[in-house]
Amino acid sequence: MDSPVPPRPIEPRPRRRDRHGRGMRGPVAPPQVPLSTSRSDSFRDLVRDSVDRLERRWPQLADVDFLIMDVPSPEEDTVPLGSSVPAGKEQPARIVVYRRPVEIRTKNRDDRALLVHEVVVEQVAELLGLSPESVDPRYGQD
Image 1 (cartoon, rainbow, N blue to C red):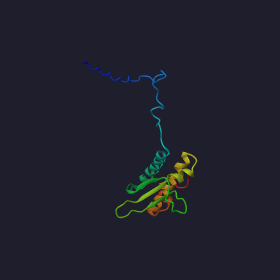
Image 2 (cartoon, rainbow, N blue to C red):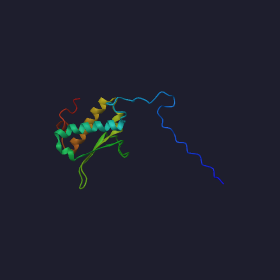
Image 3 (cartoon, rainbow, N blue to C red):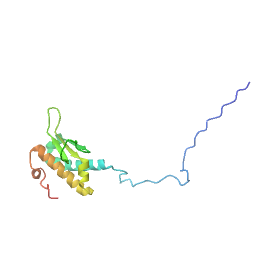
């Protein structure tokens, strides 16, 4: 007896056009423009710019960890914009900038950049035991 031959599996054809026949989409944005930058990425860039600006004047800041947290811990009575922790036995000094409180207090990117720089300068000054004006002579002038 002859056994029936199983049907060949149907292979999907590669799609060359979309289902409406209009072809493939073009680029969403020009190549020099980032497709998407999240608010946290943008904030991180602001902090990094401020730190880079200060590291040129204060090379010892290369040993400090700069962190970004969304919000401070809830046991605070007031809402700080940043905090600093001196170096311990086995951990380097840390400066923390809190993203959400800074964002809430600013209306646009330029204001945010100024406030971020002020917070970083204040925390560096506290860590080094100096006044903010000696850390950055332009502090408070912008």
